[in-house]
Image (cartoon, rainbow, N blue to C red):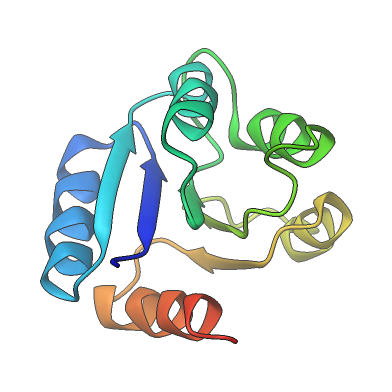
Length: 123
């Protein structure tokens, strides 16, 4: 059975590119374009992994992380942050939140796929 990935990002073109690449690699993909609907989608679809942007409308990625990790139903879902933010302390903030990994935009979809494969194929 295909692993399910939820992509939460407000950049439609990026989401489409990532979705195409992940589907071509055999993953099932769900999408949400803001943090609030992303949380709803997590609860509806129970993904195996969440790819999450930081800067989004309605609720930023940090808030989404905090809510997912605080909820007993979703706290075990690995989260990869992907963001254009180059802020100092990004890695520390991600570690503090309990994020599984992060990747800085722009990125090669092949690099993202390698990280996704590594996380989802751990047994």
